[in-house]
Length: 247
Image (tube, rainbow, N blue to C red; front, side, top):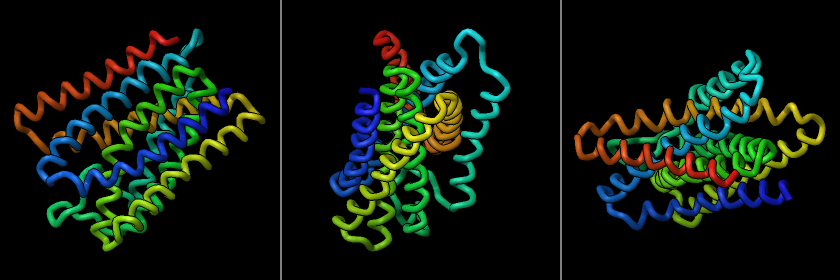
């Protein structure tokens, strides 16, 4: 049953790539306001998922060991490498003359690797507990919504048709299924894999929230916008906290 929920969750996450059409439906100013709110909410869910669900599961009665701490740092470092070495910008704003994104196809490659890791992380969380899996899936979904809108805009800006951009975005997203399959395969050999991949997920969530999402929000310093962003972050954390009562 656990494996069923793993692949169901990963497929749902992959289908989120289709929300890119929102980029075409909304006016630029409206889209920007919606995206900043979504980014705020995503930052809250990722931080809440990491600190409320995953870290407590890792610590247990023995606490977090040095090896688990290294795995958390490894998660931060790997996501940093994705951005620096592969030249993939984990950005959540649509491409425009004022906000250019070069290397559209390289963006697809980097996004595919990121989606593979999402699949691994979701599977690892479900092996920890159903609630951890659900919390991780929701955190990934809310993060993917603004991310996929941004990715879709990159492909459109690069000259792709709407249909081709949606197809390529979906194919890149479905690589998460391969990541989940790899995680399930490794789990059959060693259950220690789950512990360390969860630690890796914590590092990844922290990096994405603090290294990508929060800096995007700092670009708009208006008081009214800042208050809405703070509300979105807190709301995301509250959602993750409410999931604790499902355990």
